[in-house]
Amino acid sequence: MFKKKLKKWAASTLVGTLLVPTLIGCGTNAKTSESVASESAVLETDTSSASESDVFDARSITEGVKLTICVADNIKVEDFNTNEMTLAVEEALGVDLEFIVLPSADYENKLNVMLTGGDELPDIIFNAPDIDRWGQEGAFIPLNKYYEDPNFSENIRYGMETTGVDIPLYLTATDGNIYALPAYSQSYNGEVYKKLWVYTPWLEQLGKEVPETTEEFLAIMELVATTDLNGNGKADEIGLTGYGLNTYFECLMSSFIYAYDSNYRVLEDGKISFAYTSDKWKEGLKYIKELFDNKSIPFETLTQAAEQYTALLNAEDTTVFALAGWNPGSVKDAERRSGYTYINALEGPDGLKEAMFLPNLPNRGAAISVDCENPDAAFLVCDYLCKEEFAITQRYGKRGVDWDYFEEANIENKDAYIATVPGFDISIIAYDDANFWGGTTPQNVSYLQVGPQVMWVGITNGVAINAGASTPEEKLAFDYAQTYASSSVAGHELARSADEVISYLPLLPEEEEIITEPLSTMKNYVKQTTAEFLTGERDIDAEWDAYLAELKKMGIDTVVETLQGAYDRLYK
Image 1 (cartoon, rainbow, N blue to C red):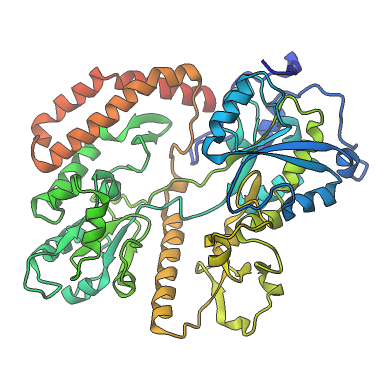
Image 2: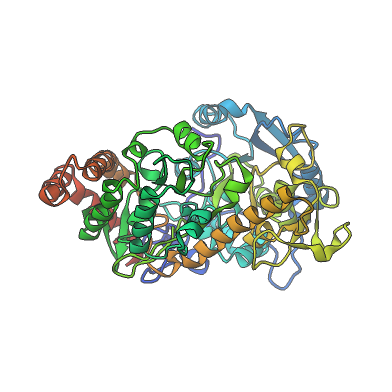
């Protein structure tokens, strides 16, 4: 299929078990980057890095090398070939980079045609789809040896130190090889994007504090539904709203059993099961049904569209006490929006209190093709793009113009500035981020977060903001931004990082084939029956056994057995 074939791996060094990214949490045998290095095979090649006794000189490998890079077009990037990031890499490493720019609307299809058509491939491909699959089919070279060599992976290793994340581990394919360079902008927001938001002015009217337990929340919700808190003489107060089940369901169910996994998988003492077969799930259903029964959650939330939800949040009179999600950003009025505060987790009847935990993990930002004549130079270029300054440039623009490290900032009264997220040190200042990132004018200083990159959360959370608001509107915006930022930090600290969570569990193709159809069928069935349980169409106690029996017919035991087999093979 491809112009060149991969050289064979040394048979004596093939790993006996497959390496995959780890499950986050205690009780798992998480492999480290050192174990990846020691267990992975070595690609046979005539090129070797400098000996440990010598000072490594990247230019001795990259000088004069021409590399082609395939990338999707971006109307906000003027020209990848003359982009200042490109020029900086060329100057630093002495390489000649030539970008092959494909239409973004058809990027994946055109790459698939390129990969299957037998044509010679570009040396480097940014943001290619299915990198692991194409790597295992021979289109991309394994990169294990480069990750193992500190000379070749200097900047990626620095990114691992700052982020605290074992980046190679999360890029390892199911055959034990690493085919990708990282694209990783670490963030807390994505980890805990689901939480409850409650309207504090109404709590003050009721003489109540922000609820901390499911019972306190239930009691307040009952008061909201029966009190004219907006003073308009109408019974239009809504305890909790959303659009569809998933906008709030997980926030409430997770006070009984962890329900933030996309397929409701749970892991306890190394054993995988599905939360929706547990008696704890059953008790959670009964609790949420109480909120439906007392009209704290209108039945319409199960079917209403996002547009109806947004209209409720922005009604002339405030009508919504609680909502769920990233933030109350759908509330357009700044004063009303600033009245909402967050609850990352309610404590359940058994003392369970855990926020959403969806780790922000590295993505696959680039791959080196099997047709690349100088993969050493190609890897060094990609690693160089993972320098911290390049990562900041990817997001914030040109240093000295669009941003500066705060100690170099060209501003007066530095004492008026604080970090965007409370508790973080100030890292950089972005002079006009709204214009740079949100503008429509093409620029030529940044790739705009395309290709390999690594940036730790301390940069984004430490961006300087002026705390000296000069108008009431600015003060409202500042307070809201601080509340939102604090919610992510608090949620991160409360999340299940100390417990067992299935954060990433790639499967072999044959395992995927076994579970895909039954898993989809089960998920749809659970969604349908959950709605029926909550509305009273089905009785939770009377029909629970029949519900479990139906899941068995759908193949839940086979799905669990397959997932458990993968887990045991990889981590035991």
